[in-house]
Amino acid sequence: GGRLDRTGRGGRLAKRALRQRGSETATGGRRRHIDFVEMTGGKGVTVYAQHEVVKDLVAARLEAGGDIRFEVEGVRLEGIGGEEPRLVWSGGALACDFIAGCDGYHGVSRASIPPDALTLFHREFPYAWLGLLAEAPPFQDELVYARHEAGFALFSMRSPELTRAYVQCRADEDPDKWTADELWDELDRRLAVRLNRGPLLLKSVTPMRAFVAEPMRHGRLFLAGDAAHIVPPTGAKGMNLAFADVVALARALAGYYRDGDGAGLDAYSDTCLARVWKVQRFSMWMTRLLHRDPAHDEFERRLQGAELEYLLGSEAARRALAENYTGLPLDLEGV
Image (cartoon, rainbow, N blue to C red; front, side):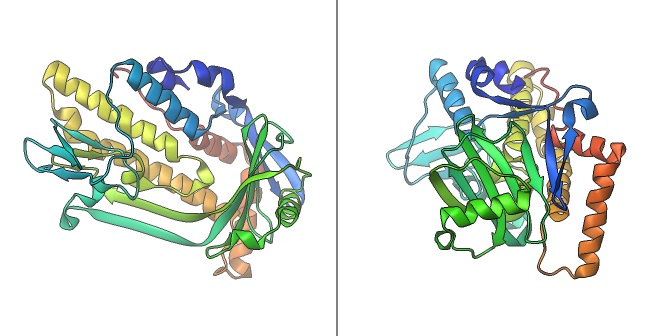
């Protein structure tokens, strides 16, 4: 929320966001609470839909007189390794000092970097999430994560009127093979709750993968967000990482234009990747802790259960989870 406030666009977030003190973990038919605020000395969680953040930032840019082009075709980047990079599209072109590649995993930015200039790290998981979005008020105001013999489950929310929830499924799962009642029943079983039910607005499968591209800079092109990295959604860190990238880039550009200092730009990739790998570690850890891996034998599953029990019973372990879940420190000074 503080990051949007710095743009002057925190008003809608302040009114519409859901504030959460902690989360619950369900295992063995019981739900246990982890209090993030207590564990971190005051930091909770803010739930605010990503598309609402996009609305706020688009509005801020337009109010500042910015030029935003939607549905542009034939986009390509030219000269990113030299002093005069250009953004070219069907019917137009723009000469730039620098280009920020914030166009996602499938965008043109990373694809414009010579393959031998990048090292790509991948991890694919043998399972996915089958999710629903429903017109049903959330049964409570905090998330529930579940480890169950049938697989992971997550109860979440989009707003006070909309429930968002997921169950672990096969990577090739067909969502249309599940009826609404079957999906609700499975969520109730794994989460050890009785969710409020309502009409489904969306039913979809989310693949589970991890990805990092190094370095996050090539010449005058700077990658940010999903163009450079993807984390498993278990830790809810994708958008937070993207914000951290652009804050680092904004600070570096400010130093360059205000003070003629290019040190921040030179350090951008290393600065961001240090954070990316810490968040990747946390997201992978949560994923492995809560999902049922079909490759694991009973020995591995017993270890997984023991680790979760240790987490729930240890204040030090819960504190480490809370510190990572609520977000690593981000210095906003100078932005």
